[in-house]
Length: 348
Image (cartoon, rainbow, N blue to C red; front, side, top):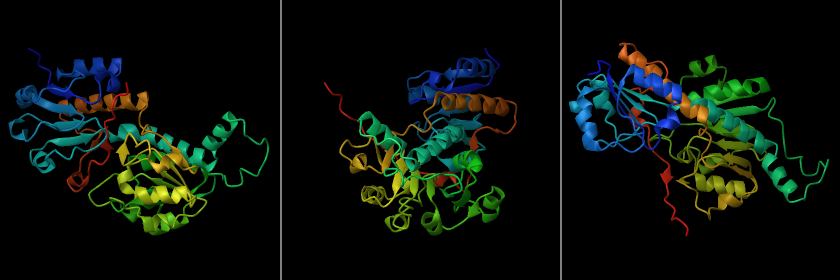
């Protein structure tokens, strides 16, 4: 019998190959005895039977019920979805010394790059110009259709939320010489200043920023935080980039204002996904749309696996994990799941 620590690996809805490269899969199996380790969801009865001996659980959520009392050896629950499962009893985890870890940092670089790409695509009309060239309707070297575009360089840029993505995005934007500001009620002004961004109110951020990045994690307190009233403060020549969750904005108001030409938007996330085929935002000429793909890059997914194996190595040695994001008692229970997945009928 193996003397390696036992770890339940049940990543469904992700697959093993999605998150573990060949090298990391080999390193994982050299480090621990993998229980399950398949793409299909692990049967709950098998999970419960294996739980008393498990040092850690690697899963995409928590669908196993109230079973932590039998997890006598458990030291960590690692979620590879990028979020915090609302079904998990965090208070019980903290009381039993079980760390809850999220793979969110693995996505930060990919989402930050996509956010910057969306901002540039919108501010320079890249998608619009692509369409007119394909339709043979372009006007070569004419300034008539480009006077609304602008340079990112030197502009005031606002971050609504300044966590993992904000930190990575700030590093990407700094060479543009922008004036950076942020609103994040979970961070102190001193911290934000140390990170080289100006702390500001949400109202002032929206009213004064030329580019606005909505990066906030969805919580029980911030549904439609960026309300219609606040959206109406956005400058008419500004770009709003939404890459966290639609939960954070009044999406109906955002749609109406972009359709009215009040400002531009670049959007990667929607209230229901896939987006309804008749949703009016699809017809907004001032919108650049992406189907929730900001983090869907193979390097980012394999970064999950690398972080998971690194932290399992630390936990097996009795050391604190350093790669994944550690759930904090003050915050973990405030996160919510927001995106509604819509099953579409298969067309004949």
